[in-house]
Each structure stands twice: as C-alpha cells, then as structure tokens.
Image (cartoon, rainbow, N blue to C red; front, top):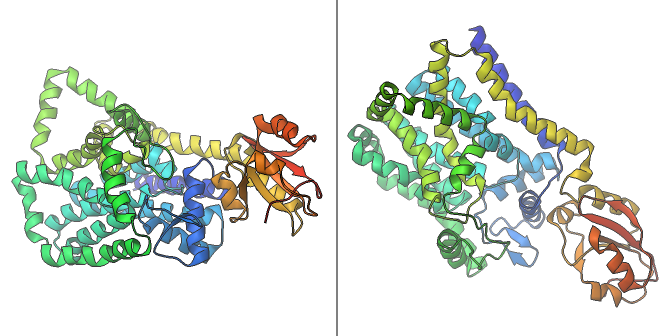
Length: 484
C-alpha cells in the first residue's frame, strides 16, 4: 500500500512540475507562438470555423480542434502562456486516464500505475503536455480509439463502443484523415492474425457509429471549404499526400518542408521515449543474445494482448519510415502502448527483485527534472531563449499612443503574439524612404543588421534592448514614420 501511495505522489510531482513550467516559460521557437497567435486571433475575431495564419491568410494546414480549446482558454483565463498551454496538459491527462483504464483491466493496477509514470516521464510526452501543439490532441484521439476497441471486447458498454467513433471524429478534427490511418493500420493485421480480437468488431455499432463520426466531424470540413475555397484540396491532397511522398514538398504555404532521411523516425523514437526507450532497447538486446530468452520472447507473440500493444506501438514509426518529411512529435501516438509494454517489463523486474525500486523512480524523474531546470534557467535568463516577449514588453512600456513597433523584413511569431498583432514588418528600403513624422518608431532588427541599417539611414542607432536574435532601436520623431 505504501509503495502504491508513493507512486501516486510521484505522478502528482510529474504533473505539477509541468504546470510550473507552463506558467514560467515564455512562448519560444516557431510552432508554439505561431499556434498561440492563431488561437488568439480566433478568440479575438470570433471566427470559429477558419483558423487564420495572419489576418489576411487562412491556415489550411491543420483542423481547428486544438485552436478551439486554446481560444476558449483565452476567453476564460485571459491571454497568457499558461492559458494557451493548459488544453495540451488536459489532453495528456485524458490520454493518461485512458491508459490507466486499459492497463488496469488487462494487466492489473500495479502495471497501470507504472504505465502512467512511464508515459508522463517520456521526453516527448512531458514536453508536449505543456506546449502549444496539435499532437497531444491526436494522441488523445488515437489512445481513446485503441483503448475503446480493446475495452469493447472486455466490457461492451455503450461508452466504449460509441467512444471508438467519437474518438475517430476527434482525430479528424484534431489532425485530419491521418487519424484513420493510425487506427486502422495496427487493427487490420491484428484482426487477420488474431481471431480472438475480432470480438470487438462484432460488438461495434458500425452504421450508427460511423454516422456519429460524420455528424461530429463532417460539418466543419464543409463549412471550412465554403468559407475559404481551396481548403480541401490543399489539406487532403497537399498535407496528407504530397507532404508524405515528397520530402522536399515545395507547396507548403506556411513554412518549409522538414526534409530528413527516410527511417529517421526511429531515432526520433529513441529520443521521444527517453529515458525509457534506451532501457527498453538494452533489455531487448539482452534477451535476443541468449537463446532461451530469445525463444521465450518469440512465444510472447501468441498473447493477443501483447500483440495488440506491439502493433499499436510499432505502426506509427513503421508508417512514417516511408516518409522523409517528418517531425519527432509524430511519435507521440505510439507512446501510450510503449508505456504499457515498458510497465510490464518494469513490474516483472521489480517482482523478480532484479531491480531496486529506486532505479525506475530515478528514471521517472530524470527528464521532468531536467526539463523543468532548463525552464527555470530560461525564465531567469530569457536572453538565452528564442522569444521576443521581453523585447516587445520593453518597447510597449516606452511607446506613446502614436508610436509604432515594426520588425525589419519579417515579424517573429512570438512578437506578433505578445504585441497582440500590433506589429508589422518593414523593408529596409521602405524604412529609409519614410517621411517625417511626430511619432517615434521602435524597430526590431536582427543583431547582425544593426550597422547595415544605421548606414542605410545615415544615422547612428543604439540598441535599447536585446533578445537572443534581435535588438530594439528607436528612430526618434521627425526622422521616420510608417507610410499611411
């Protein structure tokens, strides 16, 4: 009993650490502030159909479910980093509840508890659970669907039977048709080779279930195409086909293709599952070396429950091995099944007294403590982070009502978010030709461009604030102004 209580306290520490990081860390990088700004625009404009990449450019790259939740969080909690990150944390919490229900029903409460600890402490899960990303919502949908399918065979109540189809709808609204691939991919071969798993299929309300899926998801697709024609072609053909087959896809409207060597997803698996993935690999290699253990491992394939978890865990990286246009976050839907498999190994090792409890507990804390320490250092030394939060705040504190904030050539997404959209880009040529004005101009410049801009304007410029990548300079009144 004491050990069980300690493990639940440990899980509470993991979840609490992530909440702390969500509150103290500014939005950094490209994806987080970009998605946060789209959610802010949704909340500000009241347009709940089309996410907007910018006020004049619709975002066709992702469905809106994550933006809906983040915009609602802004409405309820205000425009803060914590608010926009909270939906991802709640989605991860939902995935954990599903993992626990599945693992407890099939393997017992002890394995279920370790499944949660392993899942929550995997590097990608811990990071994504407090980040502004769409992936935690896809992970919630795939976990829900796979758990509902398995639980429908064990306990065929209507919440599990219809939950499978609600999960499909959630995935379609969170990521798109990829949801169907990630669920059907592991299920189809299982139904062929493991007849005992077919009982779930017989208990599913296929007609009314798919009708429910379409009822929940299809209206948004129709409304989105009607509101911004061209969406369906770009999203279905471009994002789901061309991006997959073409590593250097040039049709991306919102960034650049993530071109990598095919098969690189397996390196991502190791990184995303740290520290547990390395331990799992070491344990697997050890079993493969010894003939007796290798034979015992091969026999485990006959257990349909283990086969179910293995197919669920492996399909996602196998599928993305065919594409070179990938991100490490694509691994996330596989980590729920991996965590249960790893929990079975941990529980067996602890039961055989090969390990002391301190070893898995230490591994559980390794990534969360390291990431939280990084966030604390980042909060104390923000100049190390790729964020414009503090530069924008400094500019806004100095600006008078008629003053303007601009960035040379391109506005970073974090600057747009923290300025609530009240910032624009300006070219050096336009900056040099601006007429006189009584208003001051605050300009964010890449650090390496400070002298070049000063020479072009024929006036000395002095930095009043610096972020990691930009300097803020003041062009005084009567020297320059934005054209009207």
